Length: 224
Image (cartoon, rainbow, N blue to C red; front, side, top):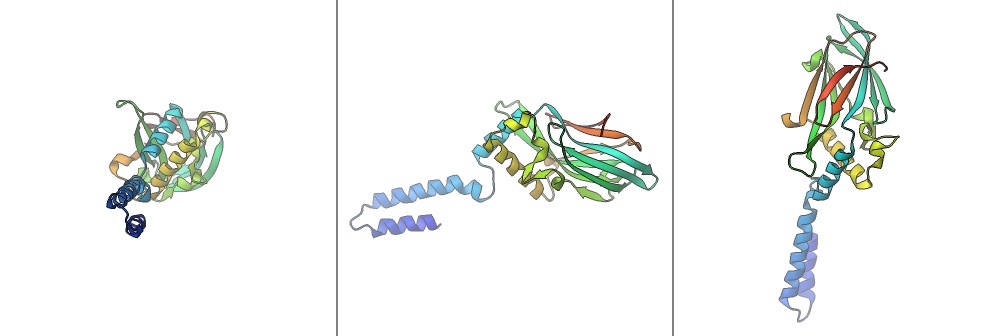
């Protein structure tokens, strides 16, 4: 460690210096190094965890991160429009793609958080992949870029209150959680939620509603 080396050299360079001073400097350097070690490894600090839990506690109990519109349905598959939304219902992006099969599999990256009290939890769901054939196989569409707003997950932002009240630390913590979600190439089973989207009809619109417990449901939507 460069800091440790400098501390040793500083202690040696003092004429008539007391050995205790050098060891005190070394000890302080080691403590500071250990405190910064989680950040060095890219791990969340205690402050990050607290800010993320605080941000999660401010989010609505239920929200709609995306809507689907079935453009066409045939024996070959589905033609689908996907619209991502922020917390105020503002459009973030619009994608149109074809998928094999008559159903889709929507996979989320899930992050479970304790909100201060041991029995109070909140699960953040980041839409990750949309697959054809109910998610069993078929072509897949990676979704992160569709709601990435300069590193911040736009589905947790708002133009009309709500998440707009997030502090800078809370926004930074959400951005770091989003970065972790994007970096997870093969998430553990405990960090994945796959929702089967079936019964889809041509010309119909649907919304995916997420609740604070980390459940996601497909519901009919009157508008796309």
